[in-house]
Structures are given as C-alpha cells and as structure tokens.
Length: 482
Image (cartoon, rainbow, N blue to C red; front, side, top):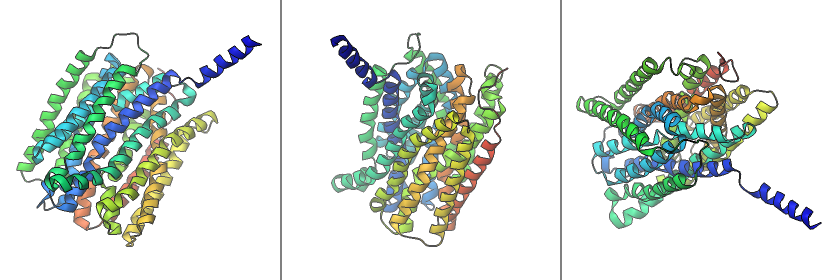
C-alpha cells in the first residue's frame, strides 16, 4: 500500500515537474520580452519628441518621415544579419547566438541612450539591430528542435508572447518614464532615460540564458569564434548602412530614398547569399514554397512595425489626446498579440491534427485581419475620434494578426529542412524585414503628404491581402524530398 502511494506521489511529481522544453520556452520568452522592449521604445520616444518638438525632431520639415527613417535604420541592421546569424547558429549552436544577441542588444541600447547627435543615435540603433538580428532565426530553430511535434505551433506562439509583452510594456510605460524624467532633468535629456533603464535587465537576461538554457547539442559551445564572425559581418554592414545614410542625407535626399537605398543593400546581400551558398543551401534558397513564405512575410513585418512604431501617434492624433493619454489604449495591440500568438499556435496544431491544414488557418486569419485594418482606415477617414472604439479596433487587429504570424512561422518550420532550420528562418526574416524597413518611413511620409493616417492604413490592408494570395499558392506541407 505504501509502495503504491509512493509511486503515485512520484508520478504526480513527474507530471508537475517542468519539461526541458518548458525551460527553453521560459528563457526565450524573457529574452524576447526585453529585446523587444529595447527595439520598441524607439517609436514612443520618437513620437514623444515630435509631440514636444525637441531633440532630433526640432525644426524637422517632415518630422514623421524623419522619425520613420530612424526606425527604419534599426531594421536595416536587423535584416542584414538574419541569414548570416542563422548560418552561424547551425554551425556554432543556436544558444550561443541567442546569448550573444541578447547581450549585444543590452550594450547597444545603453549606447543609444548616451548619444546626443542624430547620426550617433542612428548608428547606435543600427548597431542594436545588427546584434538583435542574430536572435530570431536561432530562437525559432531552437523552439522547433526541442518541442514535441504535437506542441510545436503552441511553443512557437507561447515564446512569442514575450514579444507582445515587450511591445506592450514599451508602448505604455515609455511615455510615462519620459514624463517623469523630464520633471527632474528636462526634455532634452528625458528622452534618453528609457534606453538607459531597459539596457540593464536585457544584460541580466543574457546571463540567465547562458546559465540555464540547454540546447540539444553535444558539441562544446564556442562563443568567441561565433562572436568574432558576427562582429566581422556587423562591421561591414554598419559601414555600408551608415555610409549610405550619410551620403543620402548630404545629397539632400528624402527619407523614402534612404529607405530605398537600404532595401537595395538588402537585395545585394540576398544576391551574394544566392551566389555563394546557392548550391550548399539549395533546399533553403531555391525551394519554391519557401520562397513564397519568405515574400509573403513582408506584409507581416510591415504591419507589425506600422502598429509597433506609429500606433501611438495614430490613436493620439485621431482622438485628439496626448501621447501619454493614448498609450494605454494603444497598449491593447500588445495585449492582443499576447493572446493571439499562443492562440495561433493552438489553431495551428489543431488544424494539422484534424487534417484541415495550416495553410487554410493562415488564409482565414489573414483575411480577417485585412478586414479589421480596413475598418480602422474607414473609421479614421470618417473622422472617428472615440478613444475607446479606437482601442477596440486596435485590439481586434492585434489578435488575428499575432495568430496568423504564429501559423506562418510554423508553416515555414514544416517546409524547412531540419539541418538548415536556422538558415531558413534567417532567410525568412531577411526578406520579411524589407517590410519593417519600409513601414515606418513610408507610413510617416504618407502621413506628412496627406495630413492623415488613412492612406497609410489602407495600403497596409492591401499588403495583407497580397500575403494571403501568396500563401494560397504554397503546395507542399513538409520539407522537400529530393
């Protein structure tokens, strides 16, 4: 009898004990949250500077366009290290690259708060992007590697809740932090305080990832060679991006031309990747269905960074409320993402188990989100100003948007060859980040040109519809078999 009770207790303990993949999920969640705070505070900071006419925004003839290019420069760095970092992750270990990326983000965010010139700030944001660019491809590959197949979609989504938590916290808290700092140090210093504050927990999380996260690899973790290679890539990319930025500024070219120049750099990098690795990584680079997934992800990142960068100002201007007053309602987007990411994983896994297919789930969610984005454009275009209704619309956009993003990433993991998973996600994000680079600057320019956010939001809805069409063209459900 006692033996039976003891066995029953031991069985219950095993059930309650966290699985190894739960530990991985937790630390990747934490890293996502603080890295996302580090990148997301740029939008609220720039919006606050525009609203208060200070710092880099003072006397700018097109402040929204300038703010957009500042945001776009982060993604210029972020996109260019995606594929190289995925390649390094497959070679040196996904955990190795995640630790390096998180620590790098903390240091570069600290530097962002210490700069005082526009060019210096842009360089610090580019540097932050270059480091954080090593995260996504290795995170997605690691989640896929450690998670049981039946829970893979849910794992992809639950880890991404960290993204939503970081976005929400950055959107809601940053204006209040700046307002509080301004009372003691004045407006011209206050904007930098969020960067200084949030860099510290990011560095602490990188230590936690290094100490507690386990990767299913037998090889010794090699941090120095991986860091040296990432630094070498980043020096080249930083030089190219900042040279392009300064040349376009000195030539008097507008923000749109600067964004086009950055995208052109990305196209060159993609061409170099295909030329040098086309045969070795053919299953990642030449596969028709994966290519469709890469291109269809551009509207996803465009949408994420339209709302991640400009939602605060969109709601503030439409409702005639100040930045701080609108922040809580804009935070609904991040809360919705926190619900949508794991919900998308559940939908994704259920669709696969029922034989419905993940593609149909994506199409339904994407089209639903298109309708909600179009509704926001119609409401603002008609002069709608109710702050609660705006918040509800933002929430309604955020839930299916996050859910469809999880489904899209899980579909990509299904199609990618296992040994080149990080490269596949690196290519996914390299191509997708074209949307993130263009989104802040194009949306800001459209706002300056038309005097309203309506046109920018309509364009966003059109892009989402295009994404649905591209995914509908995907044929396979699994990796290519040669």
